[in-house]
Image 1 (cartoon, one colour):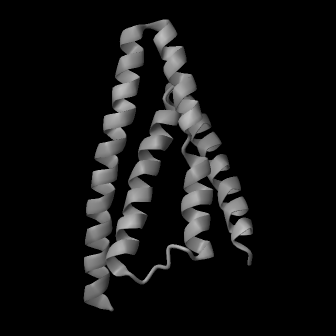
Image 2 (cartoon, helix red, strand yellow):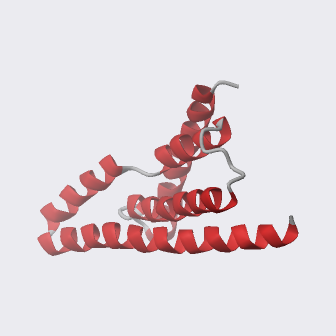
Length: 132
């Protein structure tokens, strides 16, 4: 199958998952205000885990359709920088302090999640090496 189709289907599923996270968050907390923060943090964790695993194992071809569909397609659509900036503006209009907290949580939270994802990717690669 063409790489573009993998990106298309991955993007469809990623966008749908982002939408469902918002609905789920709204049903739990009565608001979906932080759903973009949630998906961006989860996305940073997953992308880092997948990339670190691929680099360590050297068995995953990072130009393969599946890898591109998962990272560029699914995670690209799941996460959203443009929605993050929209939310940042809205929170800042409400309160500059709230906007700053949201920005710091997004940036530093994403960085921490990426580090944790790298650690998990490394551990998965080591576990997989023991069994292969």
